[in-house]
Length: 318
Image (cartoon, rainbow, N blue to C red):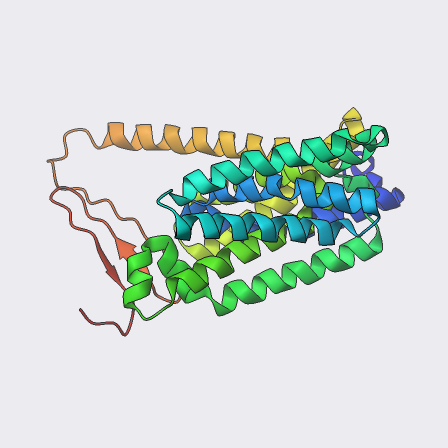
């Protein structure tokens, strides 16, 4: 048992560093992914994950650091979407879709100009988790701390944005500013993580652990903690699977994370069906459905039959 579960990480320095990098990715994506899931930003996150490709491609071809190229691609993507949304009648989803397709096409065009780009393209798309060095671990840790600090400082407006943007506005927060900040930490998480798990797979790490946590809890802090633990455990299990079955490391981690989500979803559905069967015969309206989102006491209730939604933030009277 020890030789199968522990020894690979003790005896293999590359695998040990990959585990450290994967845990940092899991922690960063747990915080950001929780907001992505609650705010409904999955399409935005997917577009950003693919939108960095042209910047990375240019950086690789010109010899610049790929992180700078990814950051430049993200800035172009976010700036273009914001400009089109403000200056036209098109919705933000339409603008995101246009830039998503355009940036991805541009990235493919740039990479197609170089015959020697095949290996680099594979590394960009699918990551190189087993090739992470100490400097990359350091910058991942810095990004993780930055994301955590921003999320903590802005936790109240971020929570209100996840509940209802109008509620954030009536509470005195600048909605556009905090939406931009939320997108910024999404972009930072993607840029910090793509070197480990790749641009295609980072989207899975953003969504899978946070979505699994959302199935079992409605408290934001607990959701982040559960997502972080699940992401770390999935990293460990995925690397073990990769080691013993000789599979791609990054893809194995994401596959395990998605499998855990599917199993959890199935378990929740079975439990709900059993609970519903046990509630047969209870008079209509006797049961109430409660949906909570907590952060420092902030919560929302949605009641059952004849229900009326209401939000309450401590210290705010209506």
